[in-house]
Length: 369
Image (tube, rainbow, N blue to C red; front, top):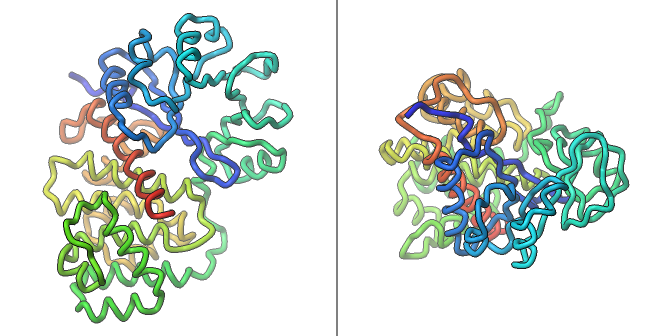
């Protein structure tokens, strides 16, 4: 079957005023039954969903799916959809309804739990209003100044600062650690770097000892972590630490980096374990320049990453780069030509994305990042 990019699940993040993720909006350009059903079954089987998903009401072809969806799911429709029997049934079962208003008008008399309105529509702020199309930092600043509550778009993916600030000491330490691990440094050398910022040790051990890592014994020290995990695995988790080590970064940006990295790792399931780890690292570093506000070339020089990773990030070529492009498509970018790499199909990509969303938000909430 030919790869159809229109069957890919796309996510759009809806942020609150603190730039935390309030909702994860899911869309699909061509919601064909064969592409949509695995997604709905996946959502219906989430035992304790970490995300509050915002999905189209029309994705539910009958009321039976309502009994399977997580109760906190928000169902999206146009104003005319409020009259549908399915919408009435969803409300009776306690689901919240969001209405998307198209054009330049906003029907204030429409009864809904949330209203989605384009950012160019002049309307007063309201606690249940989601302003869509907020794709730049200036647009976010303007929407915040107007007092709006929720913002959908890619504003968290802001550009690099025109004048690079001095690198955060914690960021510098993590990059040095990644480079040292890559060079097979002795444990005492790594411990000496960690001692410069005691919070780094605490945060890394918190990640490694989280239930999502699956270790049977608690890791008590950096030396212990290196002995149990090995350098390759430790480098992977150091990239996660790099995204969360500093302060002042949008939580949505760091969590989206985690989603992207985890999704790339899952899409590389047919690769050997070392390459899966490298895919995770590629995904994390693809957004570290924005997180650290430092040119990517400088980050890569400090971190001494594998050539396959640096090649993908700097030239946008190779198999890692193609998987990175697919991950970006699921964030709203244009699909690359010939995206059939390694016999991946939309179903496996879509399920990997949901797993990545859940994993990233679970890690963030468990560790307080």
